[in-house]
Length: 178
Image (cartoon, rainbow, N blue to C red; front, side, top):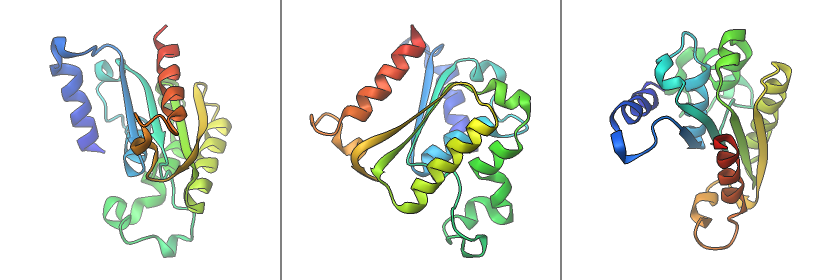
């Protein structure tokens, strides 16, 4: 998560005239989606206030916001990322324990999954949306990328087939900028 924070901070403070650093949108797919979501839920805050103020939206696609199976069967690739604190440090755990102030500071969220995700990711998607509603997070959009499996959404862009999810994402961004 710290690497994502550092990259975002660098872009926000060094991009200069090469882009609009006052209106930043951040996107992550799969593990990247879990990382960008975690970045904004972490307490104490990992982002400087001046950088957070520039982020106008956060989008995750197919993110494993939590592992839906028994904790004793936690996949090996997850353990090095979280150690013994997985349940507290995964995006779901961070959201569950987030303060009212952290929730109020969240930029608008777009939580999406592909239509043909593995069952565990489908459960993760539904559970994070359920908890976002329970915690009364205000600006949350949810969607499903029709016809796609876990790896195909980005591959479809610019092909003219299965690009509706990208169009929906762009429309969401434009709505937040208007």
